[in-house]
Image 1 (cartoon, rainbow over the protein chains, first blue to last red):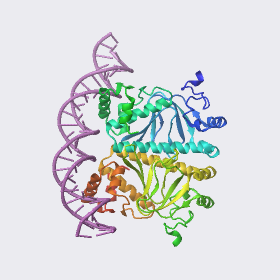
Image 2: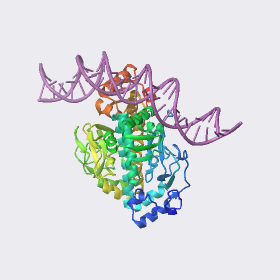
Image 3: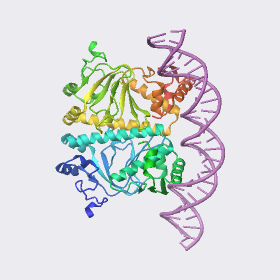
Length: 238
Length: 238
DNA sequence: CGTCAGTTTGAGCGAGCTCAACGTGAGTGG
DNA sequence: CCACTCACGTTGAGCTCGCTCAAACTGACG
């Protein structure tokens, strides 16, 4: 079982329990071995550790093996904008691809393990393995459409709809990892949630309270229990 | 000169006057010929013509040769969200790549000419021409970061800042095409601007009026003259 | 010359922000 | 073990920016 521990750096892509979600999903056994050769696994990250800073040279993209990562940009007025939360099995760091340097920063929200995939080697491998190239195009495209869903939400939805959408998204992503879709611990603070959803901390807190009063949620700090997932989904926009 | 007319369908990538902005920028002469072979040029589009509908099978990406294209999504409540405006030399349609069908729709805002690039042939060519693959990854990545800038704007900026940002963006994109950065015709309606920026028509109209009163703009319906570009830039977030 | 889509302007309202106070729990040091 | 701090979260009160609703204007087109 030790090889299956998500914090274990000796693990390889073929054995990784995220491989049904992560890049290997597009690959056959011998191709996974070639991917595995280029993946670098560092030691676990602690809460608050940066994976990369905006402005730093772009070198790699990353896959989350355990924990949770926050991606964010800082605009020229110094205001932070959270652009995404990345959970195990998800890929992040694609903001740097079209630019010499990273546009965003990425930070660990809790103790996390990640895989680093040097982008130039990934490009070479993509040119040789068509299904990897295709999968990678698809990943980036899905990042585009998910950003566009956030755009729609910020521009059209109320505070309650936004919070409901985030919670159903986390619920669905937990389900994909065979975790409970109704009981989980939020890895991010209320401030991060508010920042991501374009709301203040106070508004996020009030929405949680209201949902609790309406018997939709049971909230205990970061521990969430969804009491009425159907109702939550109907309040969300997706 | 006839071959240089942007509406002329007989034009090829090597001669196209957008080739310093469009895909050929990444390619050498003989590679441009290979790209040219897979590009399909239809007849000009009229205002209101769809290039593709959400839900339609994804087949191609597109480059704008002349005119202006609006990309938009319609959510499950039937509400439209404009996700981008595409001007000559720009690529659109990448929302479909990660999904079997298009997620968004695209419509011509005025008489326009576009090039259609069948995506599967583009994938094949990318695997053979590393610089094309790289350029295409970069294009998608830049779509991600530009969506993220919109997210930041929707979540943090005032109505005036949003309008100023859109105008400076269009101004800069015109400059790239060697057109005036201070006098141009907006191809989209106030409603489209408002939808894109997360504002109502009335608010957009009021901001234009205020900018005019402050001697920043001269507005005559869709004809815009930027009187004080520096001030406009300082009001924008980028 | 009427119609109709797009735009502008005004008046009033409300969702979410701001500011402020208070509660909670983990860490720290005497 | 308690006192203190500090980050984080909750709750309340009032305000504001942009929304809603309504009316009037403009120009293109039959």
